[in-house]
Image 1 (tube, rainbow, N blue to C red):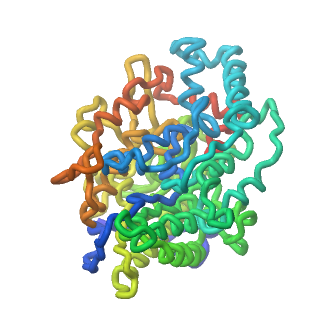
Image 2: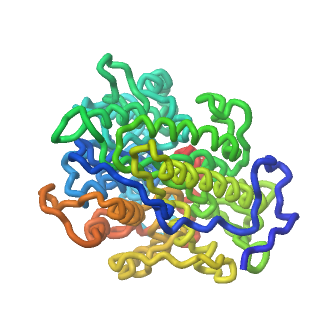
Length: 536
């Protein structure tokens, strides 16, 4: 039964255009929305896969952009037999940008072992800052400060931290203008302008014939103009274009644990920094511009993704018991390392249950707008692209441990637990969406989210890749073996055995992230709220 909406669960600061609801949005089961469209399949596009997105598509995890060779787009390219052609940015050195929490924790374990509470030793903080200093030097003044030259525009055109406006307007020239002279500050040892530095590696090669720098959408349009192998410069230059944007139009509210609704200036690159969640009307206006940009791109298939409910991410933990039986919400949401017994609503960072409901309701409206954009495109006889919906929100809801899996009374009628691939089901314990915990005997909880509590582990990205592959197969996109020529038949399954071996949090977890998350909490405290700052 739908949860009854109690007027006491309404936040008075919620804007009028947010339709606060008593039930979660039901996911879309058919990516084609039941609408058949004719598809021109003439020729083989030169660019088989192009992605535009934010941190989820860039490949961010555990506080850093690092393993871009196993981002979910690259996992798909591998299964397509196109991995050697797929161009993506790289971030070698010290675990990537801005600070890899897994690398930092392993550095501490190397120095002090995995014995209980080693981080309380005075030398632990000194060693942590030494490591951070080396990371900062590498990316601000060392080899990492130079952006490598690549031939051709990247196929993964995603940048962590970006929202809709960033992707619409930002170029490499914009990013270079924002990078300031680094200061080498001792107490603020996060790489300065880390997102801009990461973005330069994505977009520096994105130029037109006059060497003007391009936005991600303009860069994708250039790839679309390259045409097919049979007729270069003619036809669809991109076989599948995937756009997953919008999470950062709501995620800052959870990262900062502060709700600041968008207002005038939401569409200005600088002014918008003060907002943490977009009003639905503002999101719709930005989405309309994104859709128009997509329509300028010669892509055979377009997959547009919904926005996940950011309150499901374990970086914000519900305090105590839910507001009432059958509710999705807790009275407060705070950091997962603050135990219920210590939580103080007067002093600890938090958002309230009513605020969480309002954020989720706004995201439901975002996702209704995204769905309707796909529907309108599939119904438009003048649009030659074959559009599909990837319901990321629905996927995450079906994996939500504390919200639904552990609380049957809160489950809506449509809810069904997501069936993990057999290789993941065989893991003990089975991976879930709780904050990652591991001890001397290995992983104890979590496994789908990395150590920043927001971004997936490698196996989590594998689940995303599998869902997208199913949509691509519905669109009759061909998949090949590693030779790029031998057609794969039947359902294409992601090689999760390969991903488990690459996922060090699963195959070789740190030994010191105990169930009270004291180490993570200590790092956040002594390093000046570092976890939230890494992601904002």
